[in-house]
Length: 123
Image 1 (tube, helix red, strand yellow):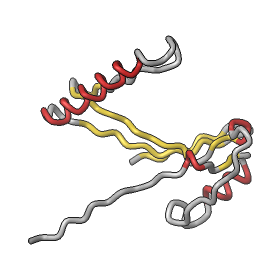
Image 2 (cartoon, one colour):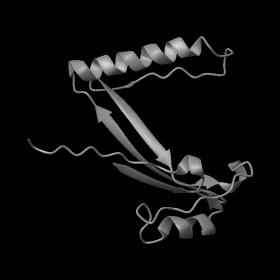
Image 3 (cartoon, helix red, strand yellow):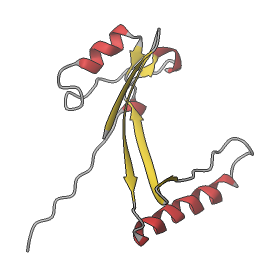
Image 4 (cartoon, rainbow, N blue to C red):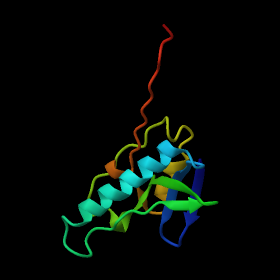
């Protein structure tokens, strides 16, 4: 997992990201092909230029998929939305909260990340 903090004169972009690589695994390649097919099918349902078709990345001749989220949105892009409280699990030391105050950023509902976990019991 990578974390990126890029400071601009009046904004902070705080992101985390992950890259998944299939390394030639057939099941992974089938998932990627399915995702490409779905986005291509969906693109026909929208006005030309209003939908971006998703394409996978390639790493050493293997498909890879990158996912990321932005913790803070520059206030000028908030479109009047109300800020959300940053979950203490995500920001236990208050660094993101402090950065949002210092660099004119806001944590919105779209910036919230939910994590799912499945637990299996033996037997």
